Length: 167
Image (tube, rainbow, N blue to C red; front, top):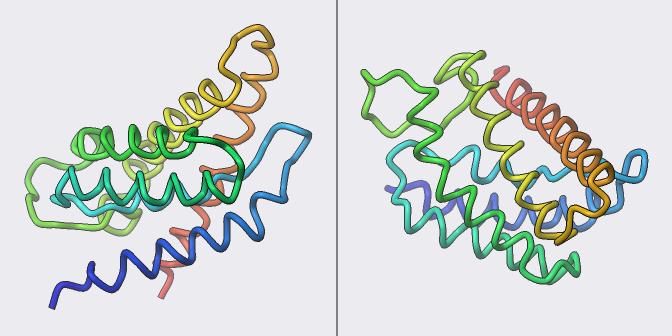
């Protein structure tokens, strides 16, 4: 049985609920907001169809846009992240394995997973805040938001991955 049929909708709903009810209400220093839902794209398994990943990411993004009042920003950023994810995963994984594996520190290694997460989340945050502000007039505020949200999101994803793979 294909467990993605059950896993993806469950993760989708849980991430939406966590982001809408908890993380959207946290804003550290006026600029750093945890964007934990990016974990959905980070955790897409190797070999997952690109079109399906982009559709799922767009659906999650547009759902969060509706609840966060960010018209299309999250949807566009999530779709772009899902489009880049397979290529970034190939950069940080060993070439010897073609089997479908869900990226985590236990499956691809701690350092490659951390680097993969850093690149994907930072790219996502750059695009997200560029679209949200739609201007570089206040470049310092943009940079604070990108760096703060990236650092907070990366820390949350790596901590969650460590807790999830502890058992």
